[in-house]
Length: 127
Image (cartoon, rainbow, N blue to C red; front, side, top):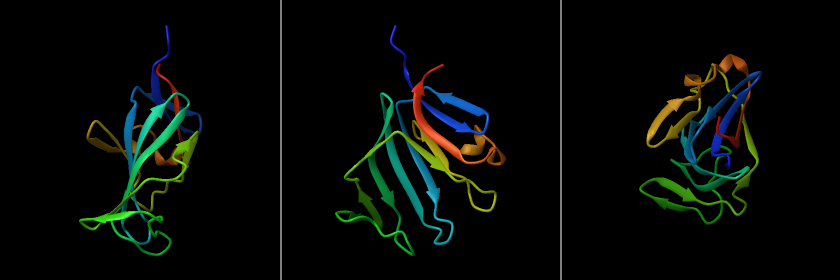
């Protein structure tokens, strides 16, 4: 029997496995207060960034070349959209990242406390 794809969130000794194949990661730039959103697909051992959006621009957050501005939101795709994992630095001093699954968004604190430290997001097998 083949293992089902899942998304794993790992912080310190804590690991959460979510049986999803698509998700959106959202956050707010700590200085500019501008929202970023990235849509991912779990593809085997990889995360595939299918599309990304920035609701404006500012210091250190210019949209990449080829981005299109639609209703005040920059939409783009990266030339290399494949990731093995992402490490998210989290802090109690800024709003936490949001993970959106099937249109429902929840802060990562729903699954893992900020105090657990940096959080690694990667593909894994469903448990």
